Amino acid sequence: MATRILNVVTNVACYDDPSHPTGLWLSELTHAWEVFAQRGFEQTIVSPRGGESPLEPRSLKFPNYDRTAKAWRADPERMALLERTARPDEIDSADFDAIYFTGGHAVMYDFPDNEGLQRITREIFERGGVVSSVCHGYCGLLNTTLSDGTYLVTGRRVTGFAWQEEVLARVDKLVPYNAEEEMKKRGALYEKAKLPFVSYAVVDGNLVTGQNPGSAKETAEKVAGLL
Image 1 (cartoon, rainbow, N blue to C red):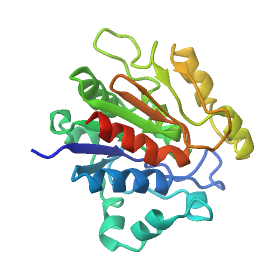
Image 2 (cartoon, helix red, strand yellow):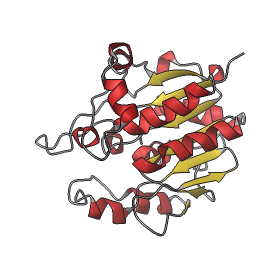
Image 3 (cartoon, rainbow, N blue to C red):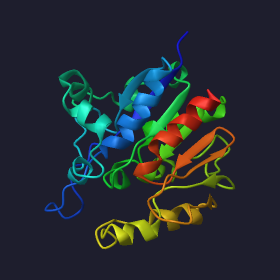
Image 4 (cartoon, rainbow, N blue to C red):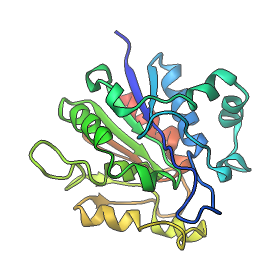
């Protein structure tokens, strides 16, 4: 039976300020998708509400808009996958070997408190499947608890988009909270690369996290290695 990956994307199209659009950071999906596809893994896309996942405009510009992202946008079948994503209640976690949370600032709004995604994540993790995220995708792990009531991230090594990177990206005044700080509040052992925006991924058992958009490929490769 083929290895199956559940990719998680956002439904949110703007910050609290509607004049500032956001959405899925496309390369964080496409880099990982390519890694998984090359290994013959089957892939499904889910979002908190199901349906359309808007694209982050900044991810469609140089230098973030690379070969894999351009190829995805040029492929109507691939784009259609982002128009009809599944809802969490349509997903049986037993069908998947790993879950991978993509980023983009949009996920800070709809990932943390989605009970359906929390259920899927908990079930995959507790039976030994791989739970992974890249960049702001780790916001999807913030409030996920295990069956014993503890946070999944407590006492585990984790990385994700750093506050320093928020400041350098000039969105520190726009984001709804400091994700790095929130991770630390939940007892996660947060770490990051010495330099901002370089690829950095952390493996702690069956938990794999990547720091920023440039970490998506490395994160996916580490997930594939575990699988």
